[in-house]
Length: 184
Ligand SMILES: [Fe+2]
Ligand SMILES: [Fe+2]
Image (cartoon, rainbow, N blue to C red; front, side, top):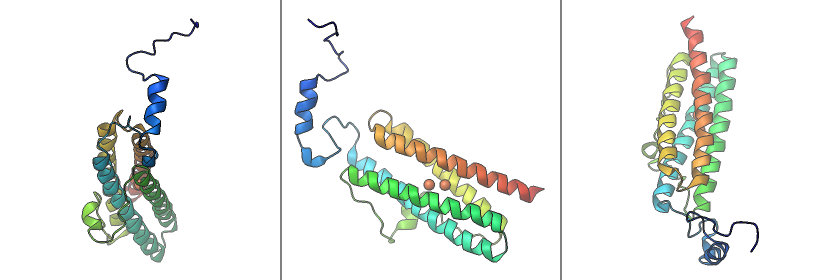
């Protein structure tokens, strides 16, 4: 008998079970038999989030180029940075979709309706910032719901969405501060 307790507890699988299960369905790559979430539903949720991120990239790009035209360099720089970060989110989400054996949906068809956030051009600089803030707040709520739904059933996707959620909260905060400048 070793000094290490042999009973791993009812909630942990023993080594033999872990090794045997890892060899089953190896073509499924990162998705093991221990994956407890509804994979099709998680892929669908991730594709909706992907559409949201792509719409946000497009909206921030539009705002960046329009703000440049009205000599608002500071705000334009913020839009540019947000566009780049939304693009990074889109890439991370697409990568996770493929890890789950799904296909990332980049089709322009229906993109705006798959997205939670809207593409609004905005007539003035203040309008643009407001629309971006609204979009961020929509993303924050929908990503928080995803995180809560995923819980312990798909920890990797949950962690990814938690990380993205934190960044969207940072974006919303940046925009709220920019809006304050207009109130002065
Ligand atoms: Fe994002
Ligand atoms: Fe954002």
